[in-house]
Image 1 (cartoon, helix red, strand yellow):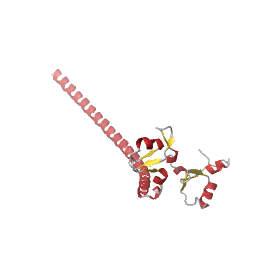
Image 2 (image 1 turned 180 degrees about the horizontal axis):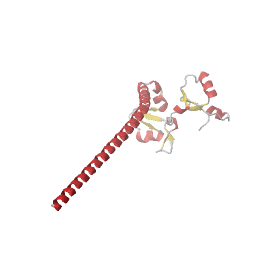
Image 3 (image 1 turned 135 degrees about the horizontal axis):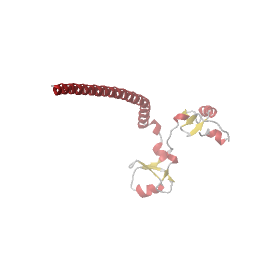
Image 4 (image 1 turned 60 degrees about the vertical axis):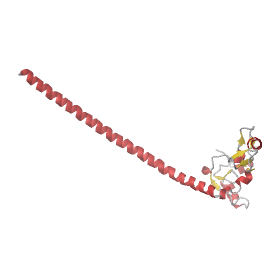
Length: 180
């Protein structure tokens, strides 16, 4: 597990319990309290450490085609990130290229982001229900399979018993005819 990042900068070891989405830092309880009262960071989105996003920040991603150059631009026409070399090679004729900073400004308040966030929350709530339903269905199928298997075995025993009864009757019949 990682340490609280502000404490780490002060050469202290503290266990993080929160994560600031805006600063992209893990925070201990004390640092969280300071973070929430400072004017510059009081409006930041602070989550429990378990809710920390698993994705990398776009600014940390690099272009694999061009020696890990940082992505600096966004091409609206191709809906893709590009580095300086990508822009020259593949997006020279594109009319709608802008810096990542400008392209991402206000994204959290956009309707598509809000809709995506609501959809993710809805899916997150539905997953446990679906999982429970799946387990219930599996148990039901196993119970039903057991009942069907028992019915098949019972039918098999009845069929064998009937055949044995017929065999006994036929042998008895044959014995009587042979004696006559």
